[in-house]
Length: 537
Image (cartoon, rainbow, N blue to C red):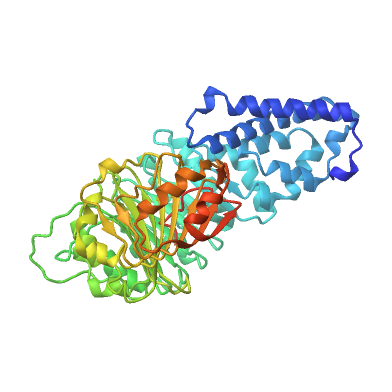
């Protein structure tokens, strides 16, 4: 397109300067915040604000010139659709009302523009939109429907709307925790309707009592349901889905308010094996005390490929049968938000006990007073065993059994050190020799010439290759002499490293001092955009 410009140079320069100045001003606006770590995100936010302003001006022009059939009103539908996609739902709706041509263009791409409805407590106001998508047979994702707590008439209206459209709803996130109590019969009627396109269902209910279904939930017709999430007070509905004929594809179950109590096990442990396609289970526990003295352990379904647990107390983990857990490919543990960072000898039993005997790699996110890690067996990611723990207390590093199964066992280690990290908060209990690590990646959120490499007291005697990684948007410029002086603090025993790679980092005045540290020095573009989500499989 740039090669076919027809606009006058002075006009283009004026527009370019106006947009450039607007982006600069927006990125410096105090309204957007001045967090230096998030400067890249702030800049993108400022840029998006400028785009919003430009687009609003374009809309105003199109409206004012509509009767004259301006060029603004006659953009190709594909171009309009690509612009509409960047707008929130409210913006798309208002934009579609600019002109008949724009309305028709938006309807021509209904699947791209109208298939996802964000969380709302006013679904009834969107009835015309749902009617249009139904007429076109477009599957719809309702990302959050909240039923009113006091307006019984609106509850009836929203339930009727859901019942009418449930046949083409692909995602239903239904929050009935505030539902008008006298209208719960209307809610039950909705959930008895067939849902042939439904793939993802989330339900948050109240303690007002269990909904009763005469024809079974979804009328026994939700053959494509794959993900089931039941919040607090909704766990009682799990038994309604234990029908292999009506729900043959449920692969992912997330469920709250679970008691890990072997002496009085939750009903869910007997229900889950009746879900024939189940591969992933994520649970949030509730405090409980097992006073039965039972030595029996809770056995998760043998077919599980991923087990994620949010324990209220790490001691609850010991209620699970360890041999069964060790056979599960991926196990993730994260404390509830209301709980402190995990202490714990309990975490060690959940680790891969043959780490060190096989090739493992590890990613770790280091915060000021906690750390999270993902330990993964090298090889095929679809078969590799993985263990994830979030928000561990630094004192866990003082446990020999923990170190021997993690930092001292892996051959490849990546450390993301966040901005708030202070080495003083970790010492003196955290001096760890990463004796098998040959490949190390260090990714500081903020790089400083004077920061050195105080990596929670870790040493790397067998280190061969080192990668220094920076946020893609920040591109730090480091003093090469200071960098060369700091690298030996990693305590590697070879005279020089095999390779040093700087990704997203430049050095000054030259790279020459770095060749005293490594046989090969590489500079690569890129970097990382965000700290990885270790919880994601």
